[in-house]
Length: 398
Image (cartoon, rainbow, N blue to C red; front, top):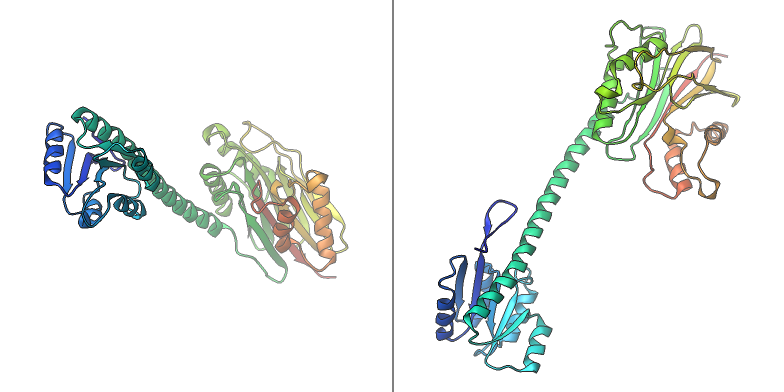
């Protein structure tokens, strides 16, 4: 049996369409195929209806007579090949003569095979099965590609919804008079592993944080969102969110990589006291935050702590600095500077810091321009890593 199952589960049967003006030929071929239970036979005696009939029955092979009244068989072959639904169906032309020139012309216009009628039964069935198998394989491949494309479209739609959800969790830009925030978030994949946020813990303490989960995709995005939620809602048990070291310790205890598909993340967390101008911070394997005063002086804010999720029982250090009355704080993922700069190699934090200072001198904070700057620098439209940059500006008194 030569019945093949297509992608939807239904069967592709061998289906023969004979186009010949002689009824006796149609009867003869039908008798040859009568014992083949897996082969369906269709006969079209009127060549003017050949295209219509072929489109209706969708054969897996067409047997086309060459010499017919009104319409030449080779002309029909050309019509089949021009028809979008019939152009790939195998064609065996039937001729009363074994002529090299006729064969060549038939192959030139699109025939797949050539037989002198009436052919031997065994040979005819063998050729029907051979050509039909190839065509059915093509149908199955096309059905598989179509199903795969639909699956990809559905997945892309779901990923797009997930990406929109992740972006919706990011905080709105803030401009309270005292504190202004602006940020840039460009995942390298549809779903990235970066996320960040900021919020008032109480009337005087403002929390700022950014994390970078290793890898990209659904898993890292889910972990990133989970961490963001516990920070936003301060739902870590027995944790004082005014103390960055306690926050990092609690995150490490609750997000061990063995329990989260071997995913870990780097993290920077700071708490600004707007009354005392003190910024208390901790970082875990994360790039330093950059504190830039209104004169362009840069201070790197980093503590030497292990990544979050790498090892249980870690003790995390914290530091406190007194910030100037006016400053900009930049917290970012390594995708903000680990970008190839042509022949100069990888861009460095020092070069990134200089870029931000130059932007400040030119009346900009650099956030809006950074993405375009990086793309131009590396010559790529899509960066290799997630790009997250959070800027917090304090417009204090004189």
